[in-house]
Length: 628
Image (cartoon, rainbow, N blue to C red; front, side, top):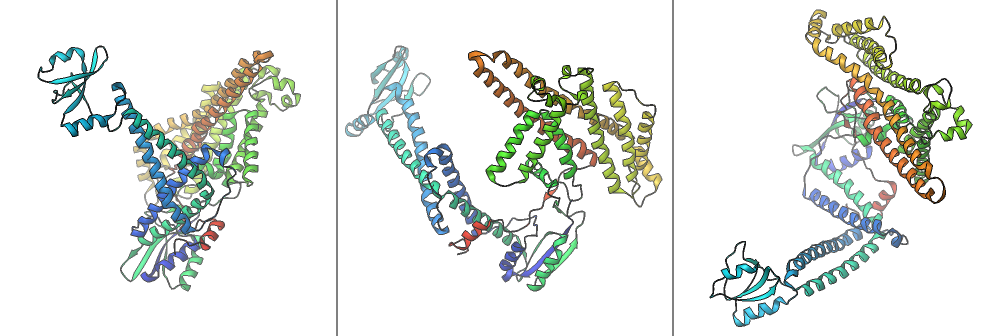
């Protein structure tokens, strides 16, 4: 559910605002929308954060590129001040490494530029110019252009390349054009450039060795980074408080259930406190509070970056229910479900904790196994059903993938049954949205428009079955559509405080838009056929790869068959997951949420609180930390 919120303003003496903010952070319930303070200390902290991120990224790059060489290194704890001192040294090494990289790039470009002139020592030419006052300019030109050089101009041909020549003009200058291309005298010759590159590469290896050594301090860097992030948040909030000199205040939102705790603390600390109900204009954050089972869908919302508005619905339970079914039908294979289940078990054992994503993976894989078992789909192979009678016995023939194994069931019958299930899920989900809207709006007259829409989409559902599956359209089906449409027009624009007739006139004024919405409702039901289509495509792909590999299972071609199966089913798995995002999420986020009238434009509730783990908090207390 969406937790009710209160708007709160806290007033403190300006001299006491630091202690007040520390208390508020300890309470951990105040959400502040505007955090845009500025100060020299805040700028310094942000700079330190950026520097530490740069160091961590560079050290992790070394670790990831050569894990086997550094696994023996033990993490080492160092004090906060030691980390900050090392930060300066490591940053200088990073800057040196970047400088070396750029210098090598420039030197290699210089080698490429002068390579066609051959290797020579530029210092000899420089010495002739300085000691004897000779002006020497180098040019590249076509041999036929030599005749265009003034007779008084002295030059030497340094390199004859057939149609092209390299010359040195002594005591003169040729005009700059496409015929006479001047060549800037390099600082170093090719040998010297390559020598500097080699020296830089040797130094780069020394720097890499330094970063190997820094790996032992990686956890310390990360802990200090978390400390600095906490301090940045604190300083930002502190300097975003409004003030008139002697009094400072801050405004935000708290869960209604936390009001008593805030009142008690305000009384004991002598704060001024104002708690109000939120208004329609307030940008109220959304805090979701669900049971342990429903919370497992939260990772999906986090990935999508979606939050329901404070005045919208918490559809977590329904989203989880339908998303799990959609996932199973789209992936459609019990064998793939087993792979996902194995992944869930592996993650569970690896992290030694039953996190929300792991729980979700357990649910999705289990539902996929159930659906795949009922349809008899195991890695897209009918042979497994023939080989293992138990698997065949668990299949419902009317929705089976391999109908040739069951008497009296045709491919068309099976496909039509799955399509029927897809449409049934659609009408159930869309009808649920209408019912939710009705109870949300009741006892307002407008609520009855939702019942009208419900009647209309149920009638459209039977029309879809007639058009797609050739089911007989019931005689009362059209009455549902017409009565539902009329009811919707009668009540949709009804509002409290206005006459029924005025609401009716507004409804009639939007008659054309309502007609277009009815067509949209029809297309929404049709769109659920994607559950059947994508699932069928997944089975077809896996079966195709099985057919490709089957003739190769014999003799020396067995490895090739295994590779085909691994690549084919691996690709199909990835495509299935992408299809879940494109289609499974869409049905929940667009069709269902659209029917509910949700826009998913909420603000996530992020209270001002300390986010440090106990180990880092202990580290900050036992070290010379930021506050010192």
